[in-house]
Length: 194
Image (cartoon, rainbow, N blue to C red):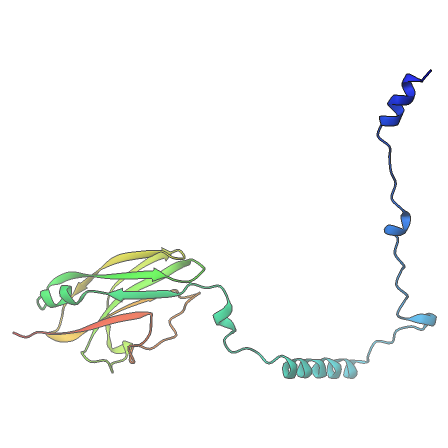
């Protein structure tokens, strides 16, 4: 006759303990063998050893000049179609200009400045000779595009209007308006033909 409890014991869960050798590891040997004390370098030796290490590190790993390009940051761009708006306005007349700005980077531009300046005509005039006409501070998220309308008043018969977009912290204004090749700005010259 079979014992009914034996059948239950046969199917009962059993605790299995892993072999201790699986988790026991050899302890690393002490780097200071033989009980000899470690002698720290003297003050003059210490700074000399650090200087040697820093020199070797700079030789082996020169600093990357475009390290900033690899960091996450906004990549702001601007396009302007304000030529019809400025050519339709008369001298002394208050008007507006519209620019389209977008962030093609991978980080939001939390304090994105959009500014409009008016100055003398031609592309060789620095920004210091331009007069600020309008500014708006916005936030541009990655991939976001916005149209911004800014106030503008035409004060001269001929001149140039410049629109600039930048983030003062993450995408600063480290460009010049003279060559007219930077993604941060758009401009148009106007002439009164009357």
